[in-house]
Length: 97
View (cartoon, rainbow, N blue to C red):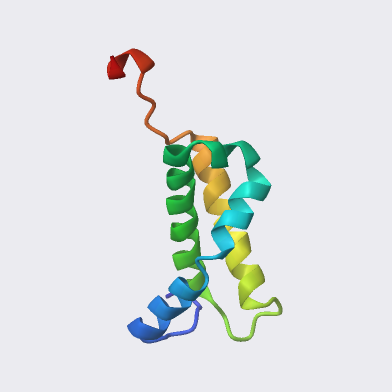
């Protein structure tokens, strides 16, 4: 926890769980077409969860921004990084036949 608030594991997990609602709106705003494909959406969602966990680990009680704003920034960064690096596993359509 570099420079962030040291919090107990239960508090950290509770903060992550209580902010999972940030993802759908952020993903839809950044990449509206992703919602149509459940598998790709789940990949973006998982990237956002990683961003949220990193944000919670680095929260600073003296920061000028609100925790929700800070978390949103980290979520956006992780989702955009996932998209930019194209980390999705693409299976050819004929693999299903």
